[in-house]
Length: 628
Image (cartoon, rainbow, N blue to C red):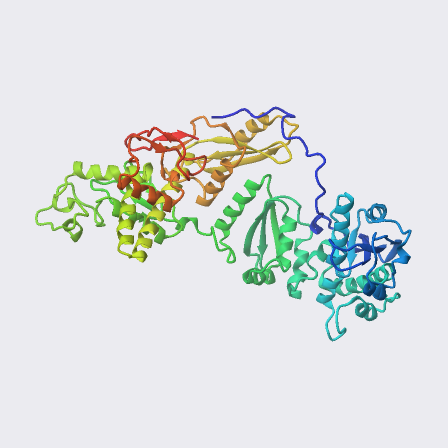
């Protein structure tokens, strides 16, 4: 039932005292000359961050090539330094006597590095020790962005220049003023010079901002990396992006529910592993964006733009008009056929739409396997002509032969009524017939044929589920719903005949009802489509339904009500379980799923039977319905 929305101030409170989040490079967007780096190096008693301790910390703070400060201190590991470590670093156990302990040193380092980007040579080692130290001392790790100079060096320094990517080799290559000597401050100073040398080499590759460093170590082709500038200036907002080619054609349409700029940038990193996307990026000359008010609007606009432009690099949602339906025709002796569109005609019933014509054909075969409905394709007269002959299906009892007068209109109408009921409401006659067939095939070890029968049943259930979910929503002239936002407030949507007509966001301090009124007044006008088709792309209606069924979503207005068939195809979410249940019923080991009781489907689709409720028999030509 429609529910009132809370008044201003009743939204979710802001989260207080939450743990610090890792800062993303894409959220910074700072030119490298303005970035403050803290280059850090540690000396330790061993290689395990959990079992060993820090003996020395050295850090250098730099910005724009200028040294802003240095921090260096020995740290008492509260234990002896192994002999081989003493030989390597020159730090002995006696040198650490009287040195400050980690709980005294770590807060000073965290304050020194506050707001900066941490840089280290082989960063996982040094940062791993610092994170472990923070856990031991009870300090929250601030989630610094981290740059690893080893990873950058592997990208731009070849083995022809250096024998390896160790700090000493790179320091010599870039003529560092400090020679690394396995002491923290000296190694940090050398790493500063190495960092500057690497940034000089990365600049011609388009690495000029801090966010560029996130993927600078990735093996991305140079021509693709240079296209990163296409993302410059794109908004940090949900919406749709369109890659355009040299002739201004749309190459690809995508969506982001959080940040368009962040999403588009991923196409220029090693995170994008699809070869066709790399090919698309090479052709692209610009990226256009459409900022959307809500994530739902972004997803819907993506589908509409794909259907409008049919971009060559989009593989789905391009041709909604090609999605077929199964139609029970309206004629004296109705039959099943696969059609491209829904035409509203008294007595006609539709299933779908299906992803392919093959899937629709399987659904037709499932219905033919459950009911003796005629399979010939010609239109039959009410009175059979003299001399007409029946097909082989009549001889084997699979058809009542209305073509020869073996079945009159009234008798055939009983068969059609059962087919119509299975398509619009109760799928169990089809499930039961297929369960029996599968049982016989399995008993004979004809497993491949049993799989084919299962696929037919699955195709029918998918088509029936889609029609029974979409039909009730498509019939509504208007439905207004609201979903709670994580930060408080509401995401509002106006849906007309299954099409998203308007959407907006309301913050937690505002009264949502005036916005609802304004949204309804300005929403797109949508003409009523032929039932059960919606007025939108089938996938758009699926998106809207998924959003409506999301946690916390409230129906604000639905003047004509919104309901789905009782015990319909949605109640059969697991085909294997349904077949097993039907087989048990046929064997008398379970109460028949007739008029006694039926398992009520859950909020979306039913799984394991839980709560029995009385069956509501659907009226002629319509399905029984339950409250949404």
